[in-house]
Image: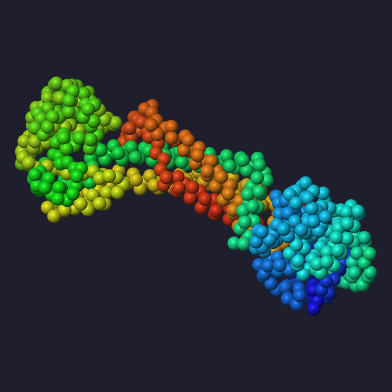
Amino acid sequence: MAAVRCVDLCKTYHQGGEDIHALDHLSIDIETGGFVCLSSPSGGGKTTLLNAIGGLDRPDSGEVYIADQRIDNLSKGELAELRLHNIGFVFQAYNLIPVLTARENIEFVMQVQGVASKDRKPRALAILEEVGLAGLSDRRPAEMSGGQQQRVAVARAIVSKPALVLADEPTANLDSKTADELMELFTELNSTHGSTFVIATHDERVMQYARRLVRMLDGRIVDDIAQHAT
Amino acid sequence: MRTLSVLWMLAYRNLWRNHRRTIIMLAAIAIGVWAMIIMIAMMRGMVEEMLRDGIETLPGHVQAHHPDYMDDPSISNLIPVSDAELTTIMQQAGVSVWASRVKVPAVVTSERESRGVMLLGIDPESERGLTFVDYDKVEGRFLDGVDDSGIVIGRKLADKLETGLGKRIVIMSQNPDNEIADRGFRVVGLFDANMDAIEEGFVFIGKQTAQTLLGVPGMVTEVFALGDDYRNVDALVAKMSVLQDSGILVQPWQDVDTYLGAMVGMMDGFVLVWIVVIFLALSFGLVNTLVMAVFERVREIGLMLALGMKPSSILGQIILESLLLLAIGLAIGNVLAWATIKPLESGIDVSAVAEGMQMMGVSSTLYPKLTMEDVVLTNVVVLVLGFFASLSPAWRASRYEPVEAITKV
């Protein structure tokens, strides 16, 4: 069973009187437990594909399946429920809720899921330790560095053990050392938690960590190669 | 339900995110609520005063008359049972605080002036404490009994008639045969009242003296009774309804003086209008605060939606934030209003504008009245209207598309 299956996806944006084909009859299967990088130049369609897989955006046509469940025809509420229980997100920036501490940010998803308070706190603290942020649980985002914030976002994305983790340019605002540390964390979590990781990036260093690299251009897959991750 | 705890936490923390804006808004709400409650307390106190004076002047919570008396308050329209029979009926009905009187229009004449007044023939003992006259504060003396030959008039009337204590005046009215009934009385007492109109409009003589003067021995024109609370007179009306068997009309005070009765309903309407008007002014600030709060948090709201929070929860979060803001503002406003009104409950001297107030039947001292019902009404109306005012920004926030909101610059 594929973790993600996209069939003949099309998505066109109209900008300045011009049609931009962000997804152009794109089809892809992503295996369960995979560690996949989607790479393209800006406007190549990787973020659009990621959003379609995450149920954040609907394709104009085509079908999207998560664990064999078709999601492109779900309602807003059903998509929210799907994201809540099945998908972890790491965005480029503004990943955390400013008024919550690191631990509370991690607990946020569990709270919305309805996990009891006594179960949430130990899980959040354990995952904070796993991402190397033990001791920073009571800090608010403004009191943490960009790398630390991204680690909290990663911890939040995986704390509920989702089947799929989607990351959109997670290293874009990080220096190279912090970016490497984050990617190492991703690969480690991928192997220990077994979640499928799909990362959209145009950073060559990030691509080196992927076991599968999918290159896109103008909404189409132009290269799909398996590789030995560093 | 499962997200309620996180919604509360987010609402509370977001509220204090922009301290200055929140404090300004809280101050506006608190002052608005304070103004609402203060104004309502003043108006309520004024109306209470009007009602109290009005009921003392009527007097009583329930009155009984000949069915035609209200249209023609003359001696022809006597209560068709004797005073002695009335006593028996009222005792059997279980009415304890009551009195009967002769009340007819008359003309009072001094050697210089004459005035139209309402002549009251009363039993001073049975009416003690039930009417607007405080016997102990009467200059001279009040009536000694039902057969007292003196007359007690208001100070203002004495001034108008250019008469005074110990002087004689003449009362002229009609007997049931429409013949002139007149007699001279010596002024034995001058009473003071809250309003000039009362001092000018009423004169007191003994009940038996009045009956003799008007040729209606043992008969009266009015029975009145007092209950515990003027707001709830149904039980008293029910007790006195036995009089209807004798062809007597029994009416609560609201029917006897429809103007006074209408005041209560008008006051309730005014209270609601006042609350709504102030809230409308407040709502601009509230909505603006919420719109700004939502506008500043577009990406954050997009993030929460992306993470799986339902639009309804976003809606709930913004509404909770609004209600929390209102609740804190209400609490401060309530305390401020209470702290302002409590020291003023002993009365505010409004004599500077008393002439105008007297025209409305209000005395020169205003007693603000803070009632729990009014406070609860104010709070509930503000919360309910606040809920509706916050719906628009909350709805807008919940309609964001996560993918667009996250990338909003």
